[in-house]
Amino acid sequence: MNQHNIDILNAVKGGLVVSCQALPDEPLHSSFIMSRMALAAFQGGAVGIRANTVEDITEIRKTVDLPIIGIIKEVYPDSEVYITPTMKEVDALMACGVEVLAMDATKRTRPNGRELKEFFTEVRAKYPEQLFMADCSSQEEGMAAAEMGFDLIGTTMAGYTTYTKGRVVPPFDMIEYLVKNCGKPVIAEGNIGTPEQLREALDLGVHCAVVGGAITRPLQITRKFTAVIKK
Image (tube, rainbow, N blue to C red; front, side, top):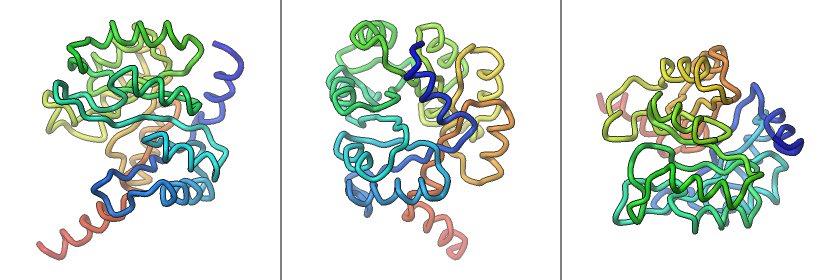
């Protein structure tokens, strides 16, 4: 691994990465607003940002100087995979210079009937020096992604695939297993909703952790509070 990538990994080690995302149907959908969210995260002590779309990443770059885990969410009719699903999205993220490029690394078939191993082999050959993060939903997927050569193994998709739906989240069992066995830095991500859960993930030995909705999605946060009133 080159020194640049080592420096990026060291910059986020043991810290909090904040996911600043808002989809088109959400009230805060705006690259400007996401850049301010990123600034708030930076001022609050975040060591990195996870962001979706070239537009948001470009605006965030103007506001904060933190490593960015970049994704592009794109829905294709022939696949359930939507996080950086094809080379088109990979190329777009590479063109805007993300420090870490994340993609779905579940066992599900990608658009155009492609399997992950074939696709990632092509991606790695095209961009051999890039740091790649695998968004996985199970221990088996995490182990497979590590073997394929992903640099960082994430628990992002746990509970979001049909075959992991209903599992206990945050997936501390999955996190612990991968930290002990996959041989790559593990990023805890997905359904970390409290500071106590963040602390637990870090205590299991993850490289860093990503928190999104609990910090940057006020619609989702408000609904949690109003749900108590409705009861």
